[in-house]
Amino acid sequence: MLNKKILLMAVIIVMSMGCRSLATIAETEGSRNFPAEISVGDIVHVATGEKITFSQLADSLDGARIVYVGEIHSNMESHDVQMQVLKEFYKRYGDNIAIGMEMFKRPHQDVLDKWTVGEISEKDLLSSTDWWHEWGFDYNLYKDILDFTRDNKIPVVALNITRGFQKIISENGLEGLSKEERESLPEIDTEDFYHRRYLERIMKGHGDTDMSDAFERFYLVQCVWEDVMADSISRYLSSPEGKDKKLLVFIGGGHIIYHFGVPKRVFRRNHLPYRTIATYELRDLKPEDEHPLFAKDIPLQPADYVRVIKLHKPEKKVMLGVVITDVRDEKEEKEDKVVIESVLKDSPAGKAELQAGDIILSMDDESVSGVYDVIHHVSKKKAGDTCLIEISREGTKIFIEVTFFELKGHGNK
Image 1 (spheres, rainbow, N blue to C red):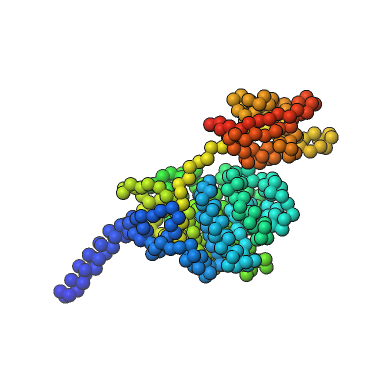
Image 2: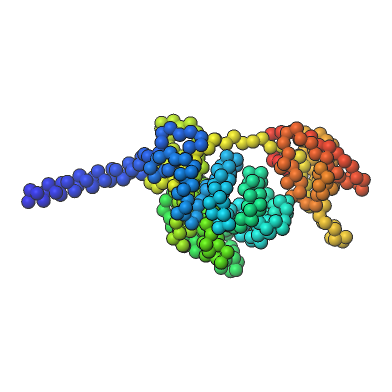
């Protein structure tokens, strides 16, 4: 009897310790192995906390069918990491690879196919995929990657849904979609406990949150977004074109952190081995600060590997300083004309005396046939650069030289 009482007391004590330690584990165990001292360029194997070389990282990719490299969209160094992995992938596996990209939308797959085989120009790629509306980040961040895919004829797989699709779901839920649109969607998982908790943190900060309608709409869009990308990846790898290929996926870091975004949804579909590489911006942390990679209430590993990069400082962009629109002469069935609707007074356009009503014909001898052409041309400029703009003003052609400079508080059109 005494032994039974002692055993019962031991069980109670262990259970009590377990209740305490479970909460503690969620708050402390996640980052236990992660090095306290890290520097830009370090690669950390998260499970062990060991720092490794890029060569060692590359060797570990041999056993994976899918490799995800999570990016920080606006950080060029994050894209340099992607480029390094892409070159290594191509060196090791040659033509047996493909690239999946969150940045492109599924309806534009035919455009990407033409890009890969060199049938269209960079300008056509960006205008046909509506890059500035559908993605919006500076194309120069991705240029080296896409040039490499074209030069080596590496297939690029569009993963994402369009902004219009997202907007409908955000405003009206899945019920707002047409029957055909709903049928085009894969099964959507909205039941992942830690995934929901992670997105609560993003939308409403740390701690308990109110399950508002706004969050539920946001969460539904996120789940649709990630399940569609997972579906795109799985479909490609099971298709005749992708059946034997290794897939390198370039995607926002938030979609792969803790594995529960896209990687888990893909694995549920095909059970193929994969690796995740997160890029982490090095920052100064106080002892009491929560580590950005290890949420206290999410007891999961953020990635298989973490590559440490510099903290991004936003670059100052130049702008032309105009509001422009496409106008089409339906009677004469001519190409669109780009008309200036208004000019910001103290902008480069204002200083050069461009006027409302001017029609932009060319920029630096490159013809302009749409608003996108102007945006793309300006995006390549920096402070101090000039641009020779040909305009039509009341039927008279005029050449005006514009000098670009930084203009705070405005966009870069």
